Image 1 (cartoon, rainbow, N blue to C red):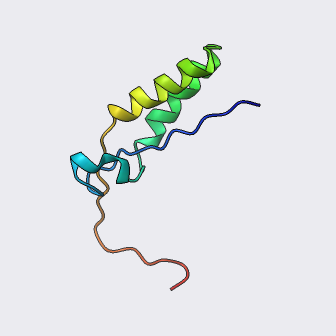
Image 2: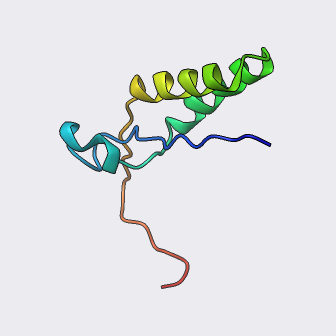
Length: 75
C-alpha cells in the first residue's frame, strides 16, 4: 500500500515564520485532515491527495491558549 506523510505545522506560537517546519500541529489538524479525507473520498490520485494536504497545511494557522499551565500525567 503506497502511503505519504505530511506533517502539520499550524501552531504559530511554537516557532517563527521562517522556521515553520519546526512548528507543531494542534487544533488545525482537524481542518487539514478533513480536506485531505475529502480528497481521498473523491478518489483523487495519491499525489493530488498529498497536494491537498500540503496546501491546507500551508493555509492553516492556530494558536493554543490556556487559563493555567497543564499538569502532565507522569508528574
